Amino acid sequence: MSDVPSFNHRSSADDVLRDQNLSGQVIIVTGANTGIGYETARSLAAAGATVIATCRSTEKAASTLQRLLQAHPQSSVEVAVMDLASLDSVSDFCRQLSRRKIDTIICNAGLVAPEYGETRDGFEQTVGVCHVGHFLLVTTLLPELLTAPAPRVVMVSSESHRTPSRLNFAALPYPKDTFSTMKAYGQAKLCNALMAVELHRRFADQGLTACYLHPGTMVTTDIGRDSALVRLAMRLVRPFTKTANQGAATSVFCATWGERHELGGHYFSHCARAKPSAETANEVAGRRLWELSEQWLKER
Ligand SMILES: NC(=O)c1ccc[n+]([C@@H]2O[C@H](COP(=O)([O-])OP(=O)(O)OC[C@H]3O[C@@H](n4cnc5c(N)ncnc54)[C@H](OP(=O)(O)O)[C@@H]3O)[C@@H](O)[C@H]2O)c1
Image (cartoon, rainbow, N blue to C red; front, side):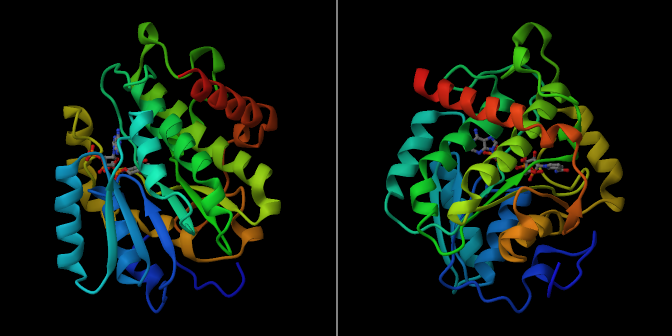
């Protein structure tokens, strides 16, 4: 990329933002109370951005605000409650931001669900939170985004977007009788990738940059909280993997570096372009997912 310092798998979010002045930028980060989302929000706030950190409860929002202000007392941080497993909650949050300029949305919140569960609106929760909630958020705030001079949407996907190799529309969001934790997770992360590519296709000519990324493998966060197996695996790999601050590096890289043509519709890992699965280029799947998601929202 032109004029972009080279970062690598060891770079942290703070390294990526060193010497950047983001004052005037309004950036929403979902799932900002812990893990990669917290480090994304904290590092962006430290660089001067006005960060709107969303959390799913009032208690988590209050403690996140306290920790962010403790870390960076001069920063311009706001917190808001948004439960991505409730479409009403997402709509309430969007209403609060109506007519406000928003430069960037980082769709970070996600989960690995050990068992089948549903959102308030009846969607399987992995796809419901990672995709449906974020789809409603971004599409509702598009008018506010498109008034910004160089708006961006950053979807935190995963290498898991490679499995399944094709988006299985017959099993979307995910059926209870064949539920598998990692298959539902892969499906959700493929939805994140397809949504970024489709956003690029639909809105690049109106100035929007949308891209998607892998933050790192087994980054030390709370993602394994509900599974003893994932928790154990994460403890074992901790010395060899990224910290949450390093895990946030590619998110803040995609939010702040590069030009639209260098980022738009592309996949990033370790702060650099990466090769995604072939399915991400499947325009038919991207369009169908978009239309299906719109239909789901209309029917709720
Ligand atoms: N860690 C990794 O190795 C890894 C690898 C690839 C991709 N990722 C992706 O990176 C992103 C961040 O994950 P992480 O590792 O930082 O995990 P984490 O520590 O578990 O953080 C996940 C965040 O998502 C939030 N969230 C979950 N369900 C929500 C809901 N219904 N409404 C609003 N927020 C919700 C969580 O809030 P609560 O605390 O309230 O649950 C938390 O803030 C995810 O999209 C994940 O898929 C992570």
